Length: 280
Length: 280
Image 1 (cartoon, rainbow over the protein chains, first blue to last red):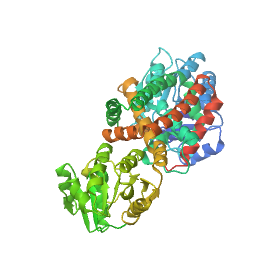
Image 2 (image 1 turned 30 degrees about the horizontal axis):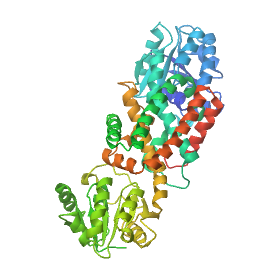
Image 3 (image 1 turned 90 degrees about the vertical axis):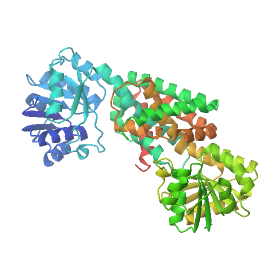
Image 4 (image 1 turned 180 degrees about the vertical axis):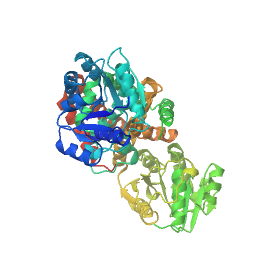
């Protein structure tokens, strides 16, 4: 769908970028709301939105498509508002990186026929509207997860990502999504943080960390509250992936303990050839 | 020391770069030997060395400073040749990234007074002489580890790195070196490989890995044999660092299992602030 009026609740890096790119793509009216008034002002000054809304409710009552671009806990709360105030015929989505909890809440508040989740796989460096970019979703993978058996909302949301924002939506069941992103996103971030955390607690002080160590821990710099909420929302899939990861560590430990060069080499070779097939 | 004749045994990315940068820095004679004849030809064509030596022995007999720039096991073997053939008054070093085993071998073959280990902390992307660069050591941290109580060789080797190659040598006991690099280099590489290995074995197929996952696994692409040898040489320090790393993972698992948001947030915050203090 190509809405005449798009609503964006939350004007941080993701919501701000989404509003901005939609405006540049010619959506005639983009209503934006942020609980932080300065973010709304920054967004309208940048030309990212056409109108600052006074409340999330105003956005829900006036837009044909509403994107809730809020942190996970706030998103779960806003779904209740959406069930009450979403305009007749309008569709709603969100951008939380874990989806089972979100679609379960949407179903619980009766939004099944008007909601599908979204998870745009983009990495924005900044925070708040200051971290928004004018077109980060072009070509980006975006998972769209239905909230129930009805597939119209997912089709409309996916179509919005594709036609308005030039992204590459993939419709996926929320449970499948969560176990995929546990591997492709949450586990790598958790491992990077664990390495940083161990280095801080047990590592040597005042030494220089090389480029490999800096790459391996890079994802530890993250918006803490969002990461906490996402890991908690997706904890079952993350714990299962952690089990497998610790299995790989166990193989390494065994090879090292036994001084088994052949086994260690095969282990390293498997890892290198898997990684070699991804982009640099 | 600023040698008139520098010898380099091994003309791969590290040895080739070292010879090349020394030549550009005005060392009058740079003898290079590679067991692969094509590497010697490539090095002399690039102007990285002045003379191709026919054997490691020739280099040891003719240079004032010999750098053994070979893989770990070959280096341990070449130290025996050095004990036999190193010219009177000459000094020898190596570039293996784990040092206790190397200095122990140097001491065992009677090289204590003529040897100090080196570990230049540079990251060269390519392999073989094709991966050599003309000046990668400028400003680089280089650990220099004495092989015994006599400090002259370490002083001379450190002075070579500083005055000829413009690097920043730090003289450090081999045991301290090994536990430092277990943290700053070997553990991060091992963790990146474990994540890649687990993803290959247990992760979903045909899915897209984001920028954080690619950074976290980047170090898994590594020269396999060297990495295997280095991890085995330094396995005690690496296993100890792995213990601490698994402790940090255990804290994460406990916080996730109990759904303890406060504990998880503090854990993530510690990791983020440690990482935030390193360069990007």
